Image (cartoon, rainbow, N blue to C red; front, side, top):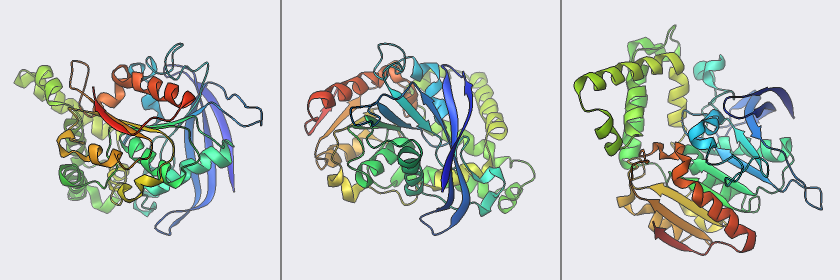
Amino acid sequence: MHGIHLSQVTGAYMEFQQADFVVHNFQFASGQVLSELKLHYRTLGSPTYDQTGQISNAVLMLHGTTGSSAQFAQAETADFLFQPGQPLDATKFFVILPDAIGHGGTSKPSNGLRTQFPRYTYDDIVEAQHRLVTDGLKITKLRLLLGTSMGGMQTWVWGERYPALMRALMPIACFPERVKGRNLLWRRMLINIIEQDPGYEDGNYKKQPASLGIAWSLFNLMVDSPLHLQEAFADVAAADATVKQTFQTGLKEQDANDVIYEFDASHDYDPSSGLEKIKAPLFVVNFADDGLNAAELGIIEKSIKRVPHGRAVLVPMGPKTRGHQTLRVAEVWSQYVREILEATEEQPVTAEATHV
């Protein structure tokens, strides 16, 4: 059983309608069951219908780790995607922005269950999103599925699990293989930093443990780019001020259990064995200065050859790139959203890998 409960319209940047979709007795991949899973989401624009009465202009957008659908409402993203004349012009598309399990307004450990909250994986997140799209919103075909970082990783999973459900796929800032190497190491370090703090108290803390601020600082360091940091911090005073501010932001805005769950959710992610199952045209966009998804590893070049209608672009480092966080700077990559939409209006994207 499930249900949708509408709430007020908000104006974070544009007017995004917000709603909750509730699934009862949701079973996680672990076998654990949550009696009521609330999925919070935003929408922008209105649905249009084809001759069969089906929604034809739905775009699903998936956010990254520690984020929420609010990420896409920020001006640096929204201005270059949703404004009139932009690739996902809100007067033409019905944009759906869900908060993933464990994030934003969706059910998460800090709602009360703490460490009793089921340990979720990306497969669980995708399953919940699929229920929202098909059962909740009654959508049978997505015009585009776009995800950034964690959302991009989930885009690969979507393409393999539900290959007939979308006309186009765009994963951004991610790899279609299990998390390992440097990317795995810093994630486990972050979790360990929090769990080893005596103030964490096995997840039963009365106030946020101080180590959460350290973990949050590590996260912010890892997702930025060396060039941006080199230009932003030229003296000790500026660096110290930012370290203090980032530390305090982590303690004020984050929850230790939520953060641990968010980073642990990727532990079994690995779509590498099923890339041939992806039928829709797929356009993966990565950034040359993204240290989390290092281009020199050559992973995308090898993987994209196995995607039937796959194309890959590596965006070079430049004055507007921010390492992994370039995913928020839609001005850098919005042209590729337009390209895949145009390409899938006429014909599928051909298999190739290009650098720009």
